[in-house]
Image (cartoon, rainbow, N blue to C red; front, side, top):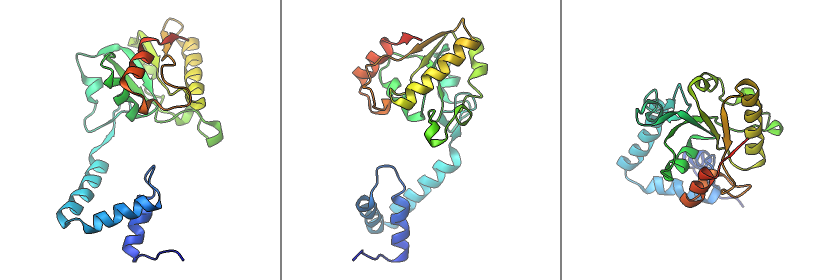
Amino acid sequence: MATRFAEPMARLIDELRKLPGVGTKSAQRYAFHILRSTDADANALSQAILTLRQKLHLCSICNNITDVDPCTYCASPTRDQHQLCVVEEPTNIASIEKTRTYNGVFHVLHGTLSPVNGVGPEQLRLHNLWPRLATCEELILATSPTVEGEATARHLADELHACHPELKVTRIATGVPAGSDIEYADEVTMTRALENRRAL
């Protein structure tokens, strides 16, 4: 017989289960931890969530999640604005930054092509990429080496070769294991992938 919780507890468990990687047991554990915490801690958590939603938005230039516009990468006078690295998600930026070998700027797609899931080029955040190519000397395609990531990289490479044949387009090397997500790559693997990127 399934355990029945009071409605407020059941509601919180249901909401926590929507988080990635959180199953029913973990959601219950988190919910009871919140219930046992002080009012101050519970209020601090709820306020942090509300502030996150209110203060963060997408950078108008690169689509990174930021509280200032443009974001710190796009606004930095020390970063190479002529080198542009295209990634799937904002979390991928941290993996590349950990290597301390890349000093260009980024462009975040917020997804990959996936016809099965109804995601085509029009669903990706590409509209603000094209104007940036006017000053770009190298565009690095750093999508994950999954089927969707490779399809996205190939699509973008084809588009770029057709519209900007003079632009140097490279792809990160397979230092990142095939079928994995670059978000989980360690520093050595990510450094090797960036150093061994290849032309497409």
